[in-house]
Image (cartoon, rainbow, N blue to C red; front, side, top):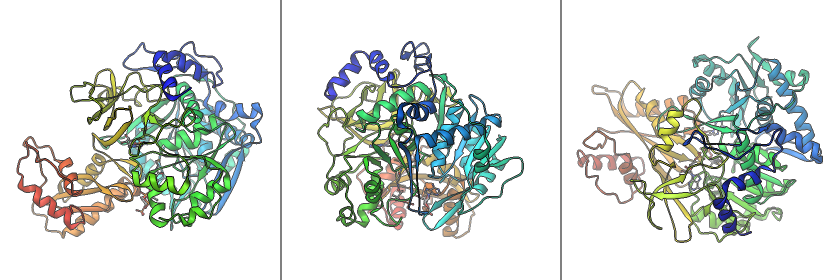
Length: 629
Ligand code: COA
Ligand code: AMP
């Protein structure tokens, strides 16, 4: 079948389409139907089925003869370690950790936060939590204590599983002090923690609260898989929104299993047994869907890569890993390729490796610029597929589904909507716009299985963030257009979310931190264009009247404050003092206009601007930081 036939089959009968896809999952009790729309506009999928995520990702493969197949390859150029873990070994290790959690009182529905770097135990922790019907929330290692504390307060975990440290180029990051700091700050206190000790920084354990992973794993009574309802949450993953309070995206068990499994062949073109590699981090949605769950549910071998695209040790790392481990489909962020391209524009490292195993490459997380795609196409000589999705959806909204049909690639477009997604470009009044015209990108409800059914403990916020703007639609927060052939073009965010090196960050959260500095009266954070990372945050601050401290001192403190409060991943290094900020007459800060000035783009003078003269002051300030032409 061609793509258009598959899409048409879904459109004609979504219920039959998803019930058919559900057959690839092993249910303890089959669902009676796919869609549950009794609470529309809140929808659920497969709610009355009974199923276990870990069973589908691990145990059933052992039962079906894949026990000796490698499930996880750990390749860590940053430590020099490598390991291979078969499905049978994974089953034993996960069952033991699940048993340890259970013995310590973790029950179905309890939350467990996971704060770990890219080590196989991070995946084991996720699987162990789902094995007993508990709900995990993985927090990215680049977030500081304060961000971790915010998530602890919201998820209210019974336990936290962490590693003693993560390793970044040139420095070991001790996680335990960050974890202790977060627990100190948080109002909610977990009952206990499990710490994976790594030799690079062994942590001190607090008696009675912190337990050693290795000791627990060695002594635990293994736990069985607990079947849960199809609409039982499998995880909460926090993502950036407009404010400093992150949104807890939740995923329901049944739809998550069905949808991810469907994508592995249809989109990523791998068969069970093939090696699939997503070079991301378990702290992000890509890591959830395509390092842990998708590949394992589908019976693939997944790679846990602890390193960077460049510098660990060189710009050939990706190609070495692909060649050494026989990777068939590779997924990364455009920023990673830009980093490699910058160091190896002619592809000298590419030529050093036999890449005949590699059949296709996927890019997501940010807009894939045509130069990067063309460079990758020329170097790798395989299809390079841009695809568009969000933490909220959990898998691609638009893509080029190579396992169904290879559609022509159009540079700058992540191609066409996937089955399940009726994507529309809407004007401000919610009316569909003609091809070629820019508007808000919205998806007709219901969203397909595996997407977010709501936000954790925040149904009203779910509605106000996503459903209220265009009744009957989910608002993606992205703006763009469709061409005559139905290809989508994703151009910009419509909110204050920026994308830095494929990481989604909230300028609102950074503004909250800057505003807390005692000398700052007012501030704005904007995302300026960056050749490598796509965007970088830039802070403009106005000082309190009477502050006579040197401006450089205050801006340096602001940079440090954001790093301490949000984390190094915010990459907040640009900060400047200005006398005043440009505003509308009603007092709204004109951030988009400042972005245009910084990027040297034409802009229309906002009709409602209070004092146009401020824009020249802003241009001069931005110019002094190397922006605005
Ligand atoms: N723990 C602690 N610190 C972390 C971290 C982690 N897990 N991940 C990143 N950081 C730190 C970095 O060390 C860096 O610190 P620095 O300011 O002291 O240099 C800072 O956070 C910013 O990191 P990053 O934006 O990743 O920049 P970088 O300069 O280290 O690397 C790239 C640049 C392009 C190589 C890198 O961003 C990259 O590989 N990006 C791919 C992104 C990706 O896979 N995204 C997932 C979505 S698909
Ligand atoms: P995240 O939730 O971190 O995955 O970020 C999702 C956001 O990243 C989307 O809403 C887009 O703004 C952007 N994004 C992700 N993939 C793409 C892509 N292929 N093209 C353009 N933007 C993308």
